[in-house]
Length: 365
Image 1 (tube, rainbow, N blue to C red):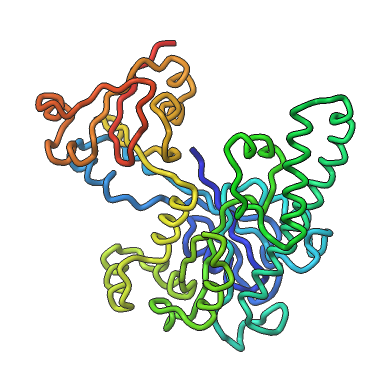
Image 2 (cartoon, rainbow, N blue to C red):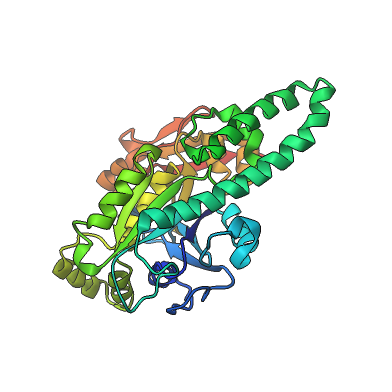
């Protein structure tokens, strides 16, 4: 499952600096708006000590960790929903992502120009939210107009969808994001094709000065109050620190640097794990001498659908899965040993995969 997160925010809040720090790609970082005209896509390897531990036991030919795609989307401005500042293009780029990483400037620096001449992360957030809400309203109103004819024919599905869209419209007109609405799976499926922006899960990334990276600051506290009702992830990070970490090639040098800063993990690691929580993602492993590989699935996924992450044929012809818990594999050191002590389980189509499961699928197509 490809996870794609879009970094958004006003110009000069630290998006491209953060992108450069966390990604294998390199975006231009400059002190002026719209330095990123086309979306930059970078690949981040998900840090997971478990895959290395499994590889140490099996000694595979290849190790394939799971990855996240990060899309650096050029700075939005007021009026983006109406096409201002290449707004339509940028909003279209957000639509293709799974989640939104909303970078907020929570630091003072007279050398870094703010597009509105002031530092106010809550006001910045409201500008972006308003533009996304206006775009969603435009999409919804267009669909409502098309549904009018279907409703007249007595189409029950159209009637149900029309009622739902009116509910969405009323909510958006109150200046609220759709993600705070409690929508069941059936209703979510009905509007999935609309690609509504404010329905996407969001993480607010508070970009602070290096001195505030551990405790936060007044700007961060204001953000926490402003988003309290959204049940959103909030991450405190210093793009400046992450830039320094990214320049260190040696892992030991990175650990020493983090220790000196009083940090246990880098902002990159926190960002990735928070993104996983945001989307309810977990990891399972396939373990063999040819390859040890991590696979990303949604929490609650059953065996056949988990197998589809490898290949759709695995789901179609699913027979059963052989499963070893990660902790058991590490304790007994091999699949054969786990089998001998009864720690290898055979599971059917209704088995819900757990985070860390080591799996082998049997299928027939």
